[in-house]
Image 1 (cartoon, rainbow, N blue to C red):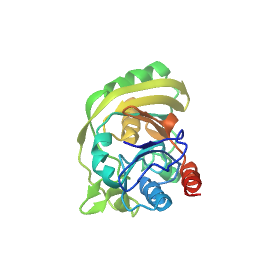
Image 2 (cartoon, one colour; image 1 turned 45 degrees about the horizontal axis):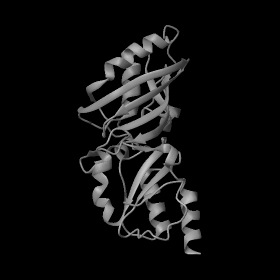
Image 3 (cartoon, one colour; image 1 turned 90 degrees about the vertical axis):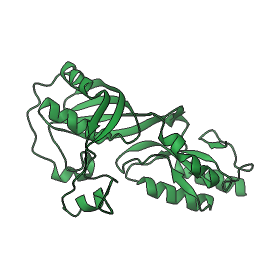
Image 4 (cartoon, rainbow, N blue to C red; image 1 turned 135 degrees about the vertical axis):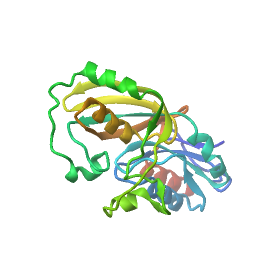
Length: 238
């Protein structure tokens, strides 16, 4: 299995139609689909897929497979994922992150919050838990993506689902922001974790920042930037 990382020197011995794995560092405000489309154009191959969506506001590790290896995407999707980020306490937003910050609720009192209190609250969301996906998500609802309906102001009825959270640790707290790390199964919405924790603590919260740092044994430290991949392809061609 050929794996493209930021340490890759050249692509001369790689047939992307036969298949390769590419570790990409997704830029903020890019959709996962946009990354896939961009890489498809750079490599000039028809089959490119990603192993787990990252929200536009999130950054970090996105695993792409090309050619025949797109059949192996589920193997990566089923591995545990690690995220690091920040939670903003005292406000909520419709999208549970910064995408809809202009519609945030008024600031609530968070003077009672402490690092220990938030840490104790996070413990309630470890293990097999039930959560409702955000309305601004890619979940299918009556033949449409939930976010398509939400952005038009239409009601979105999403069902609770079970997910597994191996770790939800609060690292630090500097009001109103708390730093955290989460290790969880596929299908887990970290935005929902942030919002549910804020609701549990009685002040509301939304996801302020998120980076996916690990998928299984693959790390963000090895991920290549999209422009670096483009330059690598150009050097290999020349």
